[in-house]
Image (cartoon, rainbow, N blue to C red; front, side, top):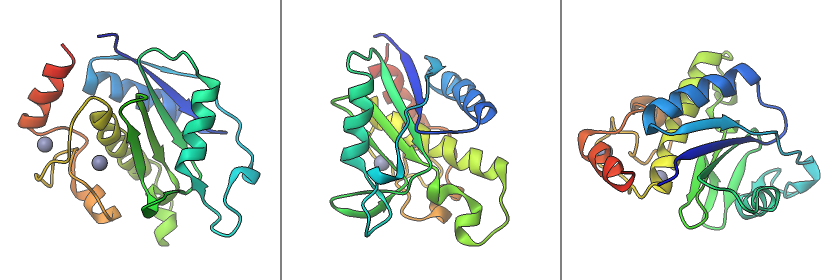
Length: 178
Ligand SMILES: [Zn+2]
Ligand SMILES: [Zn+2]
């Protein structure tokens, strides 16, 4: 299976942050990860009353910009995301289209009134990216609270899990990707 992961930043995301993320994702999935040109998305794309971006709107725009993408798209946005059944989401995976999406909005310590912390933000982002990419590669939620495929409903659960898969999930993802 072709295993290229294209990281698509929406608007400006720090370049060093993206490069570091690409390296970590390569290491976790044994796939090549490249950072694509950012996709410009104006604030007018947001739902006015919610001040949030509808996931379906974002996915449509990304697929429009990458109609023939090979491999997997990993979309990163600063916008706060929601979908029909969820008030907010940290991220989402569309397995059929091979698109993983992560929002940095609620991963920032400052969102919770804490001091900004670039390293903590990076670790949280990596965990959520590993989680959503795991779904794209066919993994389901895992009951092990330390596994990257654990479903986190709150930032505490994100902090408590690791950016690695447990042995079972690791074996499963290796099987689908060989
Ligand atoms: Zn999940
Ligand atoms: Zn697991």
